[in-house]
Structure formats: structure tokens, C-alpha cells
Image (cartoon, rainbow, N blue to C red):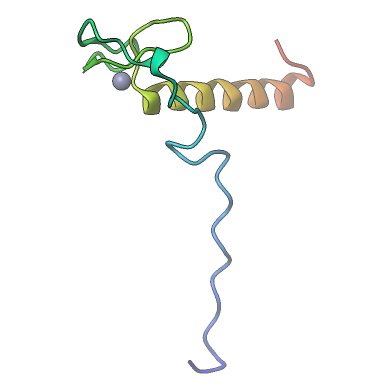
Length: 82
Ligand SMILES: [Zn+2]
């Protein structure tokens, strides 16, 4: 490496890492009755969220992240949360 090359800034730390926001290892997140359409994307899943609604873990995490981003944006814009 020559001294003239510029270093890139390290990537910004993401607000969350997909797949690592929620812990769904507990068996109550698995429905043995069979797959049902995910409440977010509509594809079948046997996973259930904390309200027992069908949801993929990554879909639930993305929804939470979106909700947090929206609340943060609203706070920045209005100076308060809604
Ligand atoms: Zn989904």
C-alpha cells in the first residue's frame, strides 16, 4: 500500500443488525399447527410474534426498526414523540 491511497471511513454502525434484534429461541414463537401467512410479507411461516400473530422474525425486526426510525424522525422534526 502506498502512502497516497486514501482510507475509507469505516461503515456507519447500523441501528440494528438483521436477525439479531429479537430472540425467538423460545418455543412459544413456533406454531406446530402449521404455516400461516406472515402479517408483514404474506408468505407462509410457522413463526409467531409475541402476540401470537404469524410473522417472520426478520419481518418483525424490520417493522420494529422502521417504527424506531419513524419515531426518531418525528422526534427530530417535532421535538417530541407522538
Ligand atoms: Zn414475513
